[in-house]
Image (cartoon, rainbow, N blue to C red):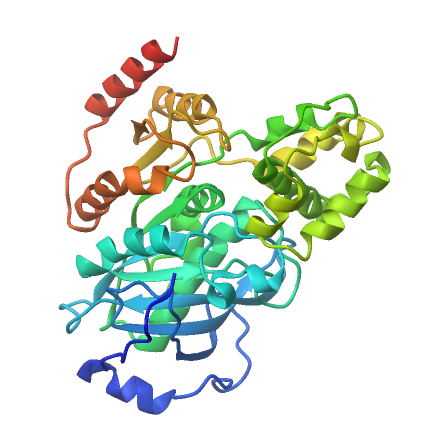
Length: 400
């Protein structure tokens, strides 16, 4: 995708901020709290959504997967016009799988699907919402990215909101926000909503989460990670497995004992290649050749997997909507439908939408529903638990 660079139109209300913080250099003494701003600078790239009249790249404090305060990066997009009274409401966008190398960060090389993601974010900008887009800690920032470690990515997305409001001020950016995400980012956005009250604190006003292609049962991947699984896989699935193993090795290095030389070589390859390249190189490979023994043979592996990958299953304070493609081969449709049904049975405020598309196509297919949900949540719309539960029951009946 290529577009000519645009001249960003500075807003009068932001002139003072630009004068005070015109460069990407450190802003005062080193901050020590999550969400503290380290630096900010105007950002220009061909993949900036067309409706963004201004864009900035921020460096900020946020925890890594060990819970230690680290550095993260992300982008802030602003809509046209002057901010309304109370500031622009915020959409915190969590991206899908890009890779685990620094060069794979969206702020470095752009989104994996730039036109699709740009269309999706443009609809929120056109509505008058600001958008923040975290790279995730260790992706384009110091440290190693722990792929699919949902709590880390969730915290990163919330801390970027804090840093953005610190940069532009509370009069420019509202405390009202929603989390939105796809694929890897779907799990991040879902978890961000779950921890919003406890982690975001009283200064932020979380309103809901909209996610697509959301992985909710990745722990079950362990069942196919065994030497006798020699079925050829699509390249993307092999890439996901390699990225995931790299992350798991960071928290449970004992997993190395069940990896073969092929498995170690594949993980090493994954550390340097972004999704498109890695998927092409691994097309048709199998999972079993990566292992000398089943992953489930590692003592305590189920606890490791649940702690690393597990998405919350109760305790949501605001409505959720999950969209999923019935032809999704990357994240099985049925696992996410059953997850949503489980939430409904526990009395959680959840909605589910099905689309007759594959994983990549879900974001476009769900765009109108996503915008309607976000508008309702940011502007005080009603959520009907009874109607959504009835819809879920019908989808479950059809799945049977």
